[in-house]
Every structure is written in structure tokens, then in C-alpha cells.
Length: 302
Image (cartoon, rainbow, N blue to C red; front, side, top):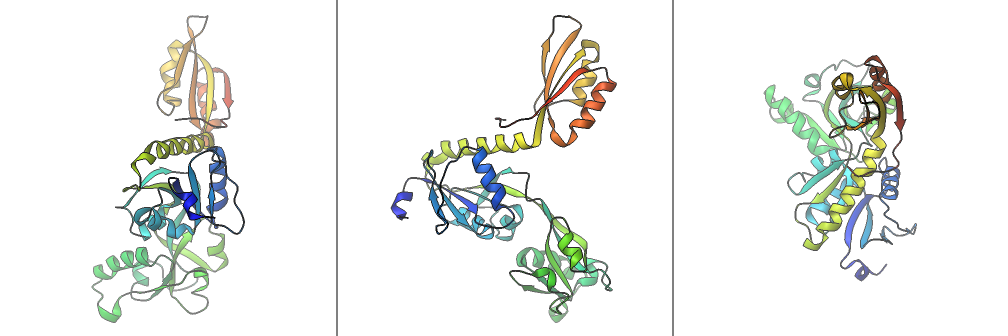
């Protein structure tokens, strides 16, 4: 692709592979960002907006957004902190997928039971900065100096194998389901942070005229995330029981309450979290609600 074709376009960085890639493609489709990508190219033009998508390793995206000309990006909250880009990028939206924990892990059958037990020993990780900050605090608390302090070693992959292969006494790595950790004979003894995918933007945008398009894309993505998280709950209830019902279904902002022909009854519609909808319906029945319906959302604006 001729790089001159990118001139004037908003640059949007997407993870090129890994745990976030497929979900990002679903998110772009839900936001009606249309594109065709060649397998051999990591840059493609959006058909229906003046946007160019740039496919990069997720760990590099915060630096490209914070220090380069990339306007928007999707990456992990963890790598934003690992790249020390908190002052240069803004997390516009947490996206609700890619959730996992960055944890200290050690052999389950070994003598190390706490992070303090691991201090002064060998730790292998792909998150060198976060791990160093975490263990530096513990080393300081334990008054460890010089060669007594924890040794942090970076490796780019197969971190979970480091203990079994004699490279480390413990590791710092991401845990999603925990299956890989348990298969390697490890268990978690401390959590550094909880993370998930985030939409980020540069604090020093390359072009001021991109602001309206950035806001449009952020609004669309927020709508897709909300539609994946919420359903609409509609029901009828007496006015006397309405205060109790509103406590159960407060909505994202507030519920919609409409009068019915019977003056003592109202119709209520509110967004509720999809994972809670069965419990919400049970609670509504207990306070006298009837005709309780749940509607799925394909898309929305919030």
C-alpha cells in the first residue's frame, strides 16, 4: 500500500493476533467499520470512513498511540501500564473482553507460599516493569540489598514453563481461565492487577480535525459493548409497588416509566445486565410485576 494513501486519515491500531484479535474484529463489525484486509498487509483502508486500520502487536500499541501518529488503539490495560504510557494516552472505554489477572505463580508443590517467600529469588516474566515495581517494594520492605534482591528476567513467551525447566523459582504472567497455569503445576500466590481490553486515544492527537471522528467511533464502540452487556427488561407493575421495582431495575441512567390505561398500573423499561436478568425477573415477580419480558440488543447508543 502507498503510505501517501494514509495522509489525512485517522489511524486506528488493532491487535494483529493473540487473545484480543478476533474480538476486535467483531467490535469493528458492530461499529460498522468496513474494510478489506490482505493477508500480507498490516495496514488497510476503511471503506466507509476516512480511517486506516494498522494491525500491530498488542504490546506495541500503547507506544504507537502515546508517542507516534496513531490516534486510537485497542490493547490491554496491562500493557498500557507496562509501557508506562498512562500520562500519554487516555483509556476511553473498557471493552468487557480479554479479562484476566496478572499474577505471581509458583510450583504448587514447592516451599514458596507467599510473594515474600519468593523475594530474593528468580522471577521470569513478560511484564518486566510491572514485576520489578512489585518486587522492589517487597525487597525494600524486607531490607534486601545488592545480590539479595529479587532477580527479574524477561522472556517473550512460554513463561509458564520457566519453573519446570529450571529457569525460575516463580513467574509473573497473565491468568485467564487458569488451565495453562494448572497444567504447568503452578498456582497463584498474589495478584498484581486485573486487566481487560481497552480503547485508548492519544493525549496529543496528530490532527485536531480528527476529534469528531474519534468521538463518533468511541460512541459506536460504547454502544456495541453495551449491547453485549445489557438487555432491556420490560414489565407492568402497580404504582404502589413502583418504588420497589425501580430499586431492582434502576437502568443505566434511569428506567422509562409509561402510564397504562388502568391508572393504577405503569409500564417500565430498563436496561439490566445480561448476566443478572434471571435474578432480576425473580425479584420483580416477588414485588408484584407481571408481563415481564427480556429483549436482546443488537446495537445501541449509550
